[in-house]
Length: 471
Image 1 (cartoon, rainbow, N blue to C red):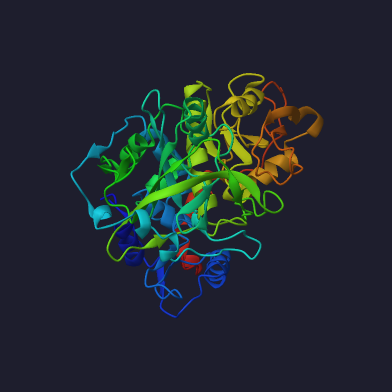
Image 2 (cartoon, one colour):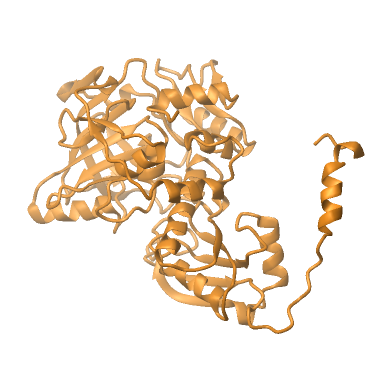
């Protein structure tokens, strides 16, 4: 059964040996994040810090930094591959399931309003020594509403505590939350914002996905879990709040007002700039939270963390869906590696059907909604290689690609301001490369690959244990 909340997910992790509880006291200031980071680099389990210095609330990190835990979140067998999960995403979201309003839920068990609001009440970590402060919104889903159409968007935008009742928020230009902000600016009205922290991880999967403008991420969460999300009305905001969330921050953002924010160690493994930068901020009006709440965070930083696994999976899924929608034939598999920060490289396996087919696929990737934002390297391989078989992909890059024939450089494309390969202050535009690593379809004489005998291979598999191998 799909999880209804974070607690159900934690229970499943523990049952599958994928959760470690740390009972020794750990300092929220750097120590917690450094333990998590070392553990992630060892491909360790998810961590629940139950004894955080100065606090009684536990902190949960590394939720989805392994394929096993990502499989559990997707309600799939624990040995499912990332590309298989991405394909399931594509298939499940062909029939969307909208949320349903309920009278109340656990999120209403505690309600702090007005003078009772204190963001330092919660065990928010200081992640890295050069960070500008404590970031309350890392594994966070942020709700905003279009003032003209009523469309509710759920996005992921980092949030730093600026004082006990204010948090900064980084709304990147062109993101849906920023498009909403621009409309409120024209109306000279504040924008209501709700930040959800601690919920079924599918919410973060959806909120960090490049879903089309006007589409409701709640519908996608429902489709992925096979059941509608139960929502309640906010205490201050007119936005649908997940009834079973651990914590929700409600407030308003004046669209033209800015305060100094940052810096922050980004998912690229670098800082996006020097010092602080004027950014938008939320005046917090209410905080609701469950009894015995769990605070959920992600270390972000250098790959691979749960952030990169999530980005890799949902970007792989949306790119695959984009190519299907564009009716590009012959697509066998798609993969955006988490090691590329889950964004900057895309690999596609294609069964070629005509001359120039593989080149068409590469150009389709960068023309797609997903590929047009952030993807800088596109690799196209033949159908005998799975897109996520990196050893074989490198083999194809080395033995099937002639750079003069196979490489296309596109000089201008939309970039992300977080790309460290570009100079700070000049990151709006990036270049791209398409690497066609396919054997040309039109060649009369193609390279002859070494293959194994099917009959002998089957015999070997049947006798495998007899040879003395364990598996």
